[in-house]
Amino acid sequence: MERRDSRQATSDYPHPFIHKLKLTRAQRIRGMVLGTILFPIRVLLVTLCFLMMWPIARLRLAGLSEEERSRPIVAGWRWWLLHSIIRFLSRAAFFFLGFWVRVKGRRAGCKEAPVLAVAPHSSFLDMLVLPETQLATVVSRSENQKIPVIGALLGFNQSVMVNRKNPESRKQAIAQIIERLTSNGYWPQMLMFPEGTTTNGTILIKFKRGAFLAGVPVQPVLLHYPNKLDTVRWTHKGTTWIETLWHTCSQLYTNVTVEFLPVYTPSQEEKDDPNLYADNVQKLMAKTLGIPATDHVMEGRVPTRMLGGLSLPLEPPARETLSLLHKDGLRESEVEVALTQMIDRCQSEQGWRAVADELVPLMGLTDRQTAAKICGLYSKDDKVDLRQIYLSVAAVSSFMDFKSLLHIAFTLYDREGHGSLTAVDVSDLMGAIVGSPQYHTEELYSELSWRGAPTEQELFRVLTTHPTYQKLISEYLASEGAESTTPSTPLINGKVGNNNEGLPNDNRSALLYKTADNSSALPHKKDD
Image 1 (cartoon, rainbow, N blue to C red):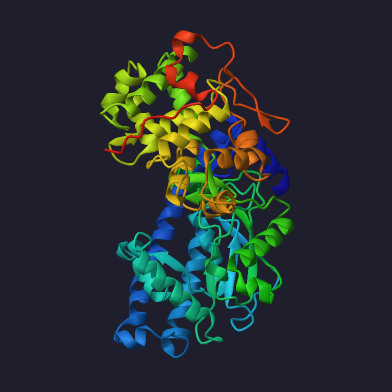
Image 2 (image 1 turned 90 degrees about the horizontal axis):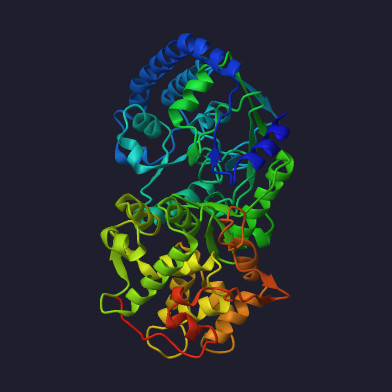
């Protein structure tokens, strides 16, 4: 049942970060009737459990000095009395929510496996695994300490706290995690969700390496929700957290199986390479679940997949931009004119940065909201880099062949006009073509520069012939979901086809004619 539902979800949604519960009319009516009765009762009972846990959690650390709080509490009344009460109330809370938990396999001891790696990560409701792991310690955002009750429970748990926005805090958290995992049983087991975010369970996304940095044995733990209705998922898009809670509480009961797999002991090669270790554990867990192991990740709030170090958004900004332009009434030829005006603006004294209000006349829009949405796709502030819009949209359109596009991109980012690119230039250029910032282009730059400074010809050769980066053009820029009126440029026998033929002359600037045979370069303009 679980695997059949997973295959269905794969066909319904374009990537694993979307989950929308689909209910029949009968299921919806049944959910409304039961939810009206069960939801308030269950929420009330869970609230009472948390209110009882609050003072008990505070009591555990009461009267202890900072030095004593920095050591594990695994003995005395603070352990055998308070720990048992919190564990009982935690189990009761999830029981009141309707969860019927079944445990499969044996949980390894702390010395045998210092860390428990749990997947798939579905929602905040996955924390039901904690009572089944003797309330193993966790890693949490430092902001959660300020939340009533939750902050007290994190203190009780002696969790590792990290401020994700502070690099120094992240370094300290990593050092603290490694210290605990290599303490030979001095600290209790740690529980981690290596995916780092929630998915719809159709695949396992790439594991983060935090649980594998210490190179110690790991016990994989699988969470199964074998129910007719998959109500527990809460992902990047789709069902909201309150809907997840409502639909789950509206069921008479929700089955969950916590499955402890055999302990995975890393080889020396895996100890030396945490990424390899993480990938191998991911593949093992995916194989057991019967679902794919992929390189999808969530960068910030952008769902992506990796390709040779490049981060490719699963929701390309360029395709969303094209959709917004078409909704605003722009035909294909008018989109091309807008792009031409954009590149002309980049060469002018005004430079390549623009605000949403400037995009309206520049792109021939009738609605400022459309301009604001496009701006938001590429930038977090009120200014957007026109080169990113131009190159990313042109890359998924049929306005010019890829060689011409790459020539324009190269001349835009060859800031010094030396005919070669620096590592930063390569990162910025690929970010513009993909439509999303690129932070891990070392592999690409190494491939480009092994024979000298990266030139335009070398960049074109690598992107069109290298097996990895060839996929950028043949798969990503021509992926499913492209507008039927703006097909991506395909690779034909390893060469990029020319799609310039047949385009009306009055819609093409002199720049595009010049770049068709790479015979000229753009004037260089420093970013304002």
